[in-house]
Length: 177
Image (cartoon, rainbow, N blue to C red; front, side, top):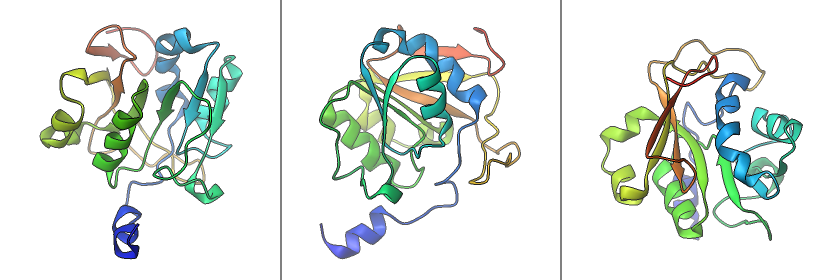
């Protein structure tokens, strides 16, 4: 990869290290049940990630990787895995989703709904796009685990081959809507 393109690919945006709170991971569990005996790859998650902790606590086999561990999502892939679940950096989201689609396996990636105003998700995911949307905005955590305050945008899981229908809506406090 050309050095200048690495700078662009890995430029750090303001929202690139927003941690996902527990209440935004729990709604995924019902949709991940079919993967209970399979391996979930969390490619943007350190050991303290709520994805990693909650999925493992609920009996899922999880492999977590992170750029800070020297595992570059664009160049690294575990030998065996079945589904991707994570909250990727919001910077360079199109490249992340293009790679996921190229890998061809189910995924659920938490992303801002503002991205729906762009042509990119419709081009990259097309008719295969599924959304797990929420009735509330997610109050993300900073790197120290503190609430960042309600964001000005809503977020959803952009999914592929995971949900029973194209759009599912859940309440962050539990339950369907």
